Image (cartoon, rainbow, N blue to C red; front, side, top):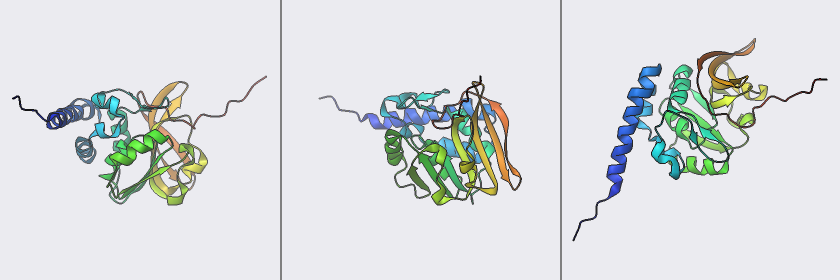
Length: 226
């Protein structure tokens, strides 16, 4: 009689190998150079935060399909955002666009606490499973552009996707002196940017042109001109 072999260990080993390849070829070679971020991303199983049918491509250096037209940021885009955020162990973080919870899990290894905001039901369900038992993360559901004022103020705002603009109501949830990292959409081109809220206002500075997943609810209102 042939012995049956449990495929689970082999699959886990395959994902681990792909994760280490991601770190070596996608992150370290592209300025994801904070050792804490590299270590966190080498530990978090990205496949656990994706729809089952897309787990096999979890470590591709590209945007991944989710549900409802949404896409998941590439490892490089997320890694560069978190690197530029300079996350501190004392930070209270608001993550906007949590998707299946991957970035929240990475941030939980770096920060004191994370509020992970997602609006899509199916993605919240995936995140709830992936983040089960993660005491540092509070998973919440609501419109992304509204943020989560109930847990404000935040030391750091991470928008893990591209937006045309950040509403004032969201910026105001960040402490004076707090940091913001986000993807931005400028005339059809996506970039990564960072900024800081000060007494005098708020602004962003681009630091990398890269393909970035667009998040819903952040389009500027179009006006008609006659």
